[in-house]
Length: 426
Picture 1 (spheres, rainbow, N blue to C red):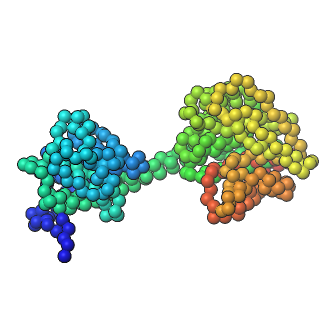
Picture 2 (picture 1 turned 60 degrees about the horizontal axis):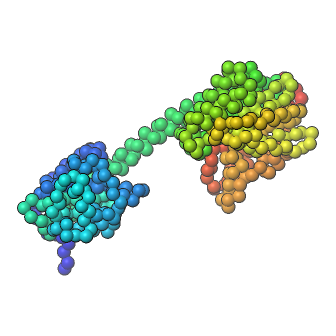
Picture 3 (picture 1 turned 180 degrees about the horizontal axis):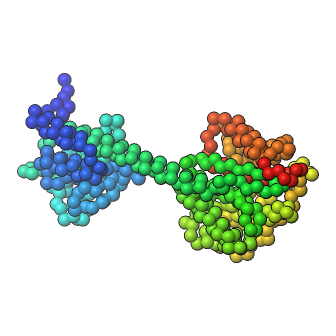
């Protein structure tokens, strides 16, 4: 019958391992646990030095943080004896390291330590995952024996489980912390949205915002200001906390500029140029910014990369489609601003501002919802209120998507000039 090396453990060895296991069962943070593992291995195997290298699967590297004279050091998995141990998941016992081609002497040169012999063991947890590598250097009084190998393997198994437990606990705590931060960011973002839609004689409006994550990269604004009815729909690159901060900043800049009496053009240009100076490279915001004169029934707008913009003309029974007037906000400083687009609103006309999350919502086969479906919906439901059309739009999106997930934020601003009863604003 074949016996493994762990079968050779003596009673004293087993008692030592049990003592280490009990010690490692205490609630440690990761740095403390790493130090405990290294100290226990060094003590049990009577080595001059020990180190624990954690395996970073994402980077394909091994990271050491507990060897006192190394600081934090990263090496590619596969380099040196430690890397070979991680790559092959096999114990490596080398009685003369400088005679072994796998030995990397650069660490010795870095620290001034002279390595005679080494015992390097893979740390594999109870799920069979590589956690890291434990390395012992310079056995007191000689080289590491087969008995040391057996003891080392048993010790490594216990250390791997303990390290895995600490890392999983840390990941859970980090996940909970991140979740709380996302919930706070969501609350902040929701607070920037209008608490109630403005009431404008002769018009009805509706807006919706459905982020793909806890926070989204979209936003909208509907507000009566001195210059008229402000309409904004914006979409920052990506979704999550960073894009949410980008659109929130953009919205605050616009409100500040308009509050100081700026025109549409001045507010748009000022906001763009400030974002261009402050947003990280590769970040930008697509944004529609419009001002409606409710008395003159004229809408003037500028659009930084946001489109298509749909104007349903009731007298023609179809949509006129407008494109963006400039590049996305924050992409570059504006050298010359194009003139604002002007739309005349007749009774029964609609303005439909929809984010990419509507048009690009795919079904299980990859077919996008698309602009034509939106145009057909408003043409067939032009007598409906904006609130009713928003409900129909969401129902159609859900039916189209089926089992396919929502990949992007969904945001809509719908404005309608009422055909009659100008005192109504539902």
